[in-house]
Image (cartoon, rainbow, N blue to C red; front, side):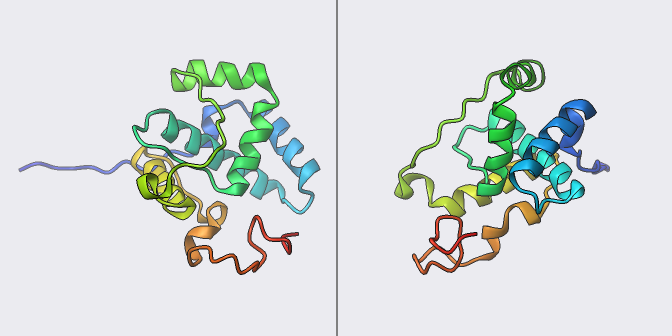
Length: 153
């Protein structure tokens, strides 16, 4: 008989120091004052989990727009970001925005769903508050306050 023991998911916030987390949270709250301390902390965790999952994925992954904002905040701290990539991920993860062929990779929603699956498979906690578009229908250019909508606040 084989016994399989599941281990609890890891909170990716533990991948960086409390000091760096506080700096990134402060930077995000300066840009987005509506973010609570808890949301800023959890967003950092989702960004780090996304980076860790992406660093070892054979297929393209994509952060949600909000998780991408957290990534941008980290990228501004170039030395800390480089150190994190080298020491924690084992390689540098470049930020390469662009459009992937929808036929080959799926649209944004499919990429983000694959990212969430990769985060879970890598053993990290997923916080669906930071992946809200996965609960929405595929984009139809309805301008219903989506990320690229003219109505987006």
